[in-house]
Image 1: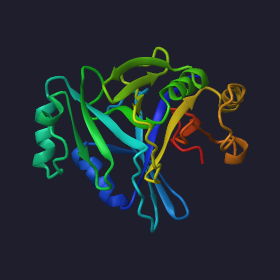
Image 2 (image 1 turned 135 degrees about the vertical axis):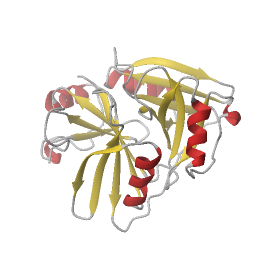
Image 3 (image 1 turned 60 degrees about the vertical axis):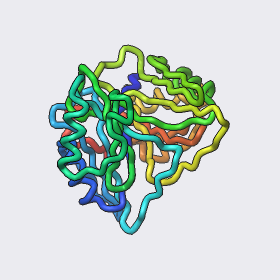
Image 4 (image 1 turned 90 degrees about the horizontal axis):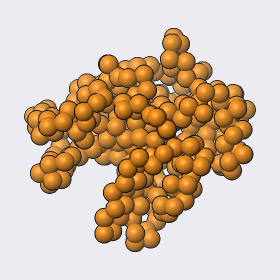
Length: 262
C-alpha cells in the first residue's frame, strides 16, 4: 500500500467564485475537471507541485449551499520560512478578509477563509511549492482511536504532536513520505465535545498501489466497508474513520491523459 495522500475535497456553493479565489490568491491552476449530471469536480494545485504533492478537489453541486461543520478543521498551505508576514500582507492587499493575522498567532502561522468559510492556515516550510498543501486538519473525539485507525489501517507513522492544556494535535503520514507530501492533522479536545460533520467537508483521498488488493487488506484490518470497489465500478472506493470522516481510495496513473478514472 503506497498510502500517499492524493487530495482533499471540499464542497463550494459558487464554483466560479471559488475557482477565482484560489487561482487569484494562491496561484493555483486547474489540473483537471469533470462535468457530471448536476455537479462539477475540479482538481487544483500549484503549477510546479511535486508528484507526491496533494491536490485540492473542489466539488460543486448545482443548487446546494454547503454547511461547514466543526468536525472539519482546515487545510494548510506553505510559504517560505521567514516570509509569513509578507505573504499574509499580500493576501490582505488583494482583498482577502483578515481572519487571524500572524501577530495573533505568535508569528508562527496565520489563517484566512475562502468564499465558503473554509479555513486555510498559512504555515512556513523550507520545502514544497509556494501555497502547496501541507496538511489537512480534522477533529476527532478519541485520540487513541484516531491514531490507531491511521497507524493500523493505513500503516501511517505519527510524525509530530503538540499537547496543550486543553487540546492536542497529532500529525500522521505514510512511512518515508516525501517532504512535499501532505499529512493529516488530528485535533483532539480534552473536554469530550462532539462535532457536527456538515456537508461542506468532503473527504481525504489516499493513493494506493492496487485498489482491490489494498481494499482487501483494509477489510482484513477491519476498516469500515462504506463503498467497496465493485459499488464504484471498480474505479475507486471509500472507507470511513471512527468519527465518520470519509476516505477515498484510488489508483493514480500520473502519466494518464485524465486524472479521473471515469
